[in-house]
Length: 482
Length: 101
Image 1 (cartoon, helix red, strand yellow):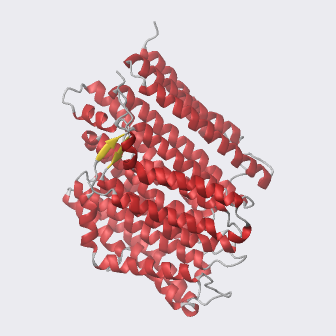
Image 2: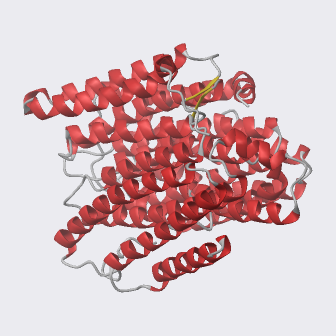
Image 3: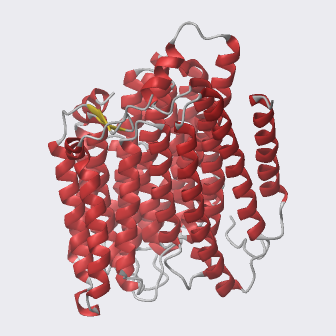
């Protein structure tokens, strides 16, 4: 009954993953043998690796294959998500380098671990079996736990790593329990076979019940990884405790992989159960939007504030998926990309304020930024307005597309609740703007970022405006992925 | 003859013990790791039982992967715990809760 055939030619469809893994191993070895003077070598090699991997994924666009005995899928959505993952990771690493340099954390392991976690994300994005989803998730998570703990002497970072580790392990356990139930009833790990089983008309009610039972656990696992209420407990603590560069990485790139996991499990696999999971996602979404908007009002630590802001953005993403139509999924994918772009710029601005021996993490650290450095204050202004959902920035259109789909799916009351909380959340975004523009600096404020970071941060800020001016192209692209 | 349902009930009980242990336990983080292992053991039981009764080996292969990943996970968990002890001098749950807001 096992007719597994390994075709060596299939490897070229997994070329981005193969290249990434080999490059990560080579960089790890090279880093061992290079002296302190050439430390930057690891960094540049990492950036080149990300670029080449992104290019390889780009050359595979248009291919559609299921390979390795149905465990790995190559499709346009996967390739596009991988390209965006690489692009955002490159931006994140540019900001990261400045942070690591000023805090004496610049080590080769950091970049290798980042590469390995990105490898895990790629596996998740291309997973076509419960096994590959789980393995990709663990490759990603294990590297991320270690990344947080890389600041070994900071008690807060280690505590954040521990909390993330324990809650992440519980989430994996719950996800696995759901997977075992799905496997038990469908008798298959392959996503396509699960989909065939779930759509077959001969299901008796007991079978639907067990599918539902497994489904709930899968949803909990996904919600944990995305950080949706009520499974958000780790988000604020980890965001606050982790070194800012890791927080930035954590809050941006893995969200693409988590969204891909949601698409593979819920839409590709259990699409027939959409009526059931839509309701679950709606509850998660509304709770996330509400709690994220309300609790952030009371935060003075900007990393913690952005953590709650992330939770509310995740709520909007889930709302898009909950509509259960292709346009809704497209809107959610667009929101993920928009959110990551904004989040990168926000954390980039925080990192730009870091200098030797000074860790910027309070809202008050932004006092008087507009007088000292009007350009960076302007970028932060754009980011905050965009996050609050003010036109013409990207954040406005991403919210608009989601709400359009929610309304046309007939959930007007959900759209109203979401808008009300979005308005409430505007308060804390505006407060940061007020701090930058109207408060006087109580200490010397320095933007000591190197030139490359300044350039990338500027482009990042400009993109938030430019994509906001022509969002329809990106929206069409996002819908075409599904 | 042991029925499939017996295995499932056993694994559900082990799973609940593991989950309850995580939420009730307020003393030691090592205990948390043990509870996570219990959850994974429950999952493994499920997979093997389903695999055996349906005659499909994929589930048993999945268990091998879970065991491997669990070993890696514990290694990382204990490494983080060691760091915790070096920084705080204790691995009690109460002592390790400074991030709040």
